[in-house]
Image 1 (tube, rainbow, N blue to C red):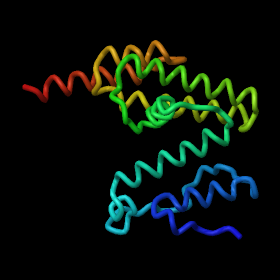
Image 2 (image 1 turned 135 degrees about the vertical axis):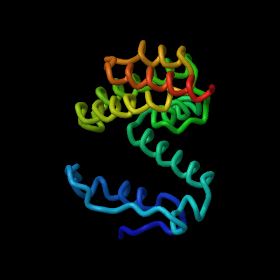
Image 3 (image 1 turned 90 degrees about the vertical axis):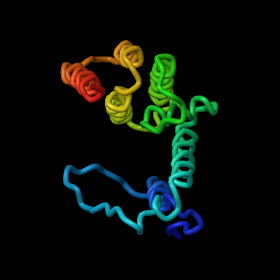
Image 4 (image 1 turned 120 degrees about the horizontal axis):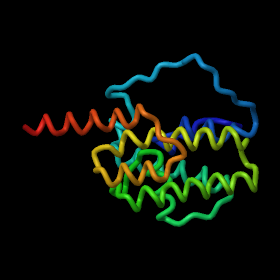
Length: 173
């Protein structure tokens, strides 16, 4: 008896997928098989970003509970921070704490083996890598904290940050 939960106006599709994940086998394929439309029918437009933000947080809580890890409100904020959903201002300390939280998640998953270790850690590192591009406006110390807490530093990220600095300096003139 699986269906959309219409009482959840935002993220009902995610909740549907979440509810059937243990009943069927999922796999990623390289082709995009759907189109995502944006416009007046978009749930965020209809219900507002605040509702979307709240529902998104509920999805993160579901994931963490399924992983079987206890978490504080601060750790939930760090989790969302890694996913580039800032409810706390990016600072060097927040970046350090976020990396420690991510390491804790990966270690916990290694122990409980809720998700395939290689896949889980690859996704975690991909989210960490993407976070870099959201941090560039928050200053050199924040970026340095990101680098110190990263497994590898790519030349392309250094180049990106230098270009960002140059553009921001020239646009102020």
